[in-house]
Picture 1 (spheres, one colour):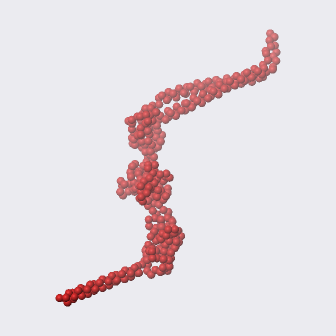
Picture 2 (cartoon, helix red, strand yellow):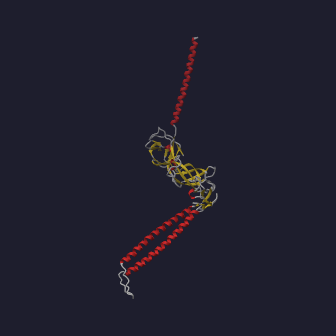
Picture 3 (cartoon, helix red, strand yellow):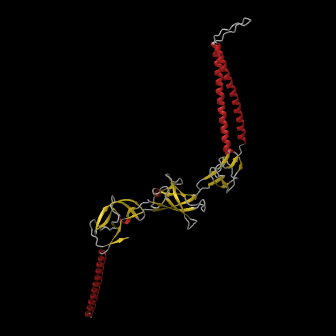
Length: 405
């Protein structure tokens, strides 16, 4: 009985030993195969080439008129006498929109005109008096010290003295002072006339732009402070534009006159061309900051885009997406982003030359999503290693490589 047990134990041990030997052999073979595969793995390289470094920035915006005019009622001007326009009416700059009741101002204006005319007549009389006094003084001066012959009765006219001349001169001075005061009254009267004329003209409200009247509200509630809603709203008849906001990261890439593709959300297969008209130097007044990607605050800046295509199919308020193409018009020497070795204070790449790696520090410039410009360190057509690994070093021999077109 004991002999059979020992036979079974020995048999089991032999089977386990054989199984362990087989497993070890398979694992060892697998390791050698992996080592062989790693040793024969080709290095990926790509030629430094010339590309246009264009980049598309995507933002959103809204269609707005080129210009608009909102006219609010001014309670201090009184009642509106008459509205001259209706909704959907075409108007030109200078066309009358409505008039306030200016009858009281016109009465004051007429009165001011009459008062000025009376003062001007008084001034003319005073001028005549001064002229006559000047003649009298001149004649009197000629008589000073002249002895008179007696007439038939023996009467001798008294001689004219210098005191007589001085008295006339003093009287003339008084007339001139009076005349200067009258001229001042004329100036004040004319200023009042001009002020009333301006007020009367302001009672007639005109359009400041060529456009279309989109709103006429004759029933706005009148309050002492005025209404927050316009009585008349006009939009310009010129081409529509696009306004919106973009992040601080995009503003540094955008310049005026850059091409823009505009895609209204209501039209799936239509697009309009435009150009960047302006990007504000100041943050958006409505909040100024937004929470964007990256977990930090992003300041938003207003922009405006001019639409160069016909805008007759567009309407005010349409929401649009915009694709702004940024970058130069000249090709630059570039390599893929994956070729760069970021080493903190410097940036380098590995270049394959005659089967060996050369580590070169490079200077970089502009970039897009795929490529980065190399301004120094690599020549056109040289083979640059893509996605270099930690085991690579300067002077390393490369047995096998694959070139990416």
